[in-house]
Length: 203
Image 1: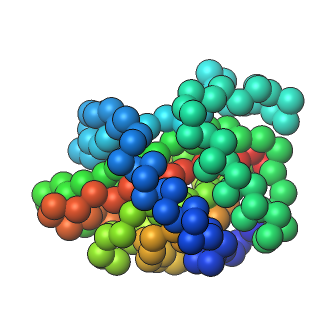
Image 2: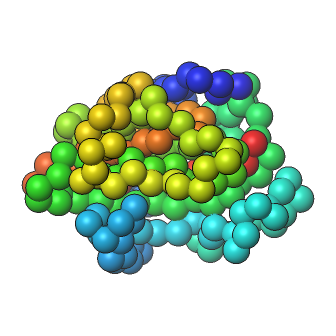
């Protein structure tokens, strides 16, 4: 189980799979989105499986709404990681690949949680970039009775958040942590794109 740990694995993806990932990244159609956590942070995205209309009704029997031919390849990596690290989950809530870029004036994106239901966040870093664009996991957690899933990056609350872990975006590293923890990512350097595959797993 994940628990309060941040699990990192840099060896689980094979050399052959790394070659496939390098090829896939140049094949995948990315679409411009005007907002991610907020309109301050536009990005390019490719949806592997869609978020359910009502996540509170989504359960272990719900059908995954697959939208991409690349879903099965990336899900196979997630499945293997979970088997290796004894991570139990019920279903895939949603999955996507994001390509983010430099945004002037910000050190990182809005701290947020991906879903209001219990879930695990899994990240697969898909390209080689500088280690400056780390994933930040904060000590702040979302309590079950709270509805707010985002902290404005410009707010005083954001400035006072304590960091639990910073994760280096090493090529083909897979990371998992409990989705109750607010997280963000540091902004890539000018000229860089940070490409990450994200799976939200229902627990």
